[in-house]
Length: 206
Image 1 (cartoon, rainbow, N blue to C red):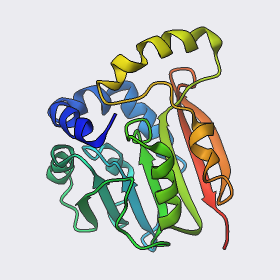
Image 2 (cartoon, rainbow, N blue to C red):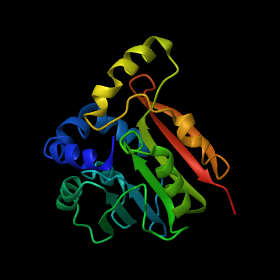
Image 3 (cartoon, one colour):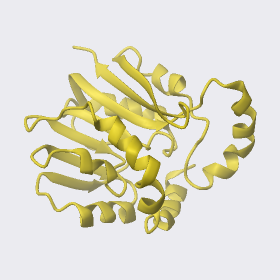
């Protein structure tokens, strides 16, 4: 996957994305991810890869939110749905965030690490912009340790990547480069027998 291909494929996905990934079990999964996460009006929240804005439905209106996405078509869908003045939208590459370091209290990455060309770099950037003791919340699909499913996934991986996502991304591999700056606070199954997981990371106090 690369940014040029992702820009094309998510332009194609934009008109149909909500029907596939923001309804049914995906809606229930997102609700589960955010049900015990508490936001306050004093916090600055960054959504990396906000897509069509599905996660914003679970955020209180008074919270200061910055939301980015690489796809202008997906971002426009989010803008059309959420006119709240406390939400600011930017078209931006998650691998090269333009924000100053230590700018946000919470960074949310929902179904984005499995999409970007370089997931490790995205986590590094999220770590850079979050404040000490701040939180990084990740919801995504990752490779499971079940050997029975590993071989079929590797066979289909190149074809699935053409649709704009990776089905054998390893969280451990992504996390390794930022391990010295982050503490893993939660690793829980959300959907499809652990393929979709929720991770909560806390940045160490500098």
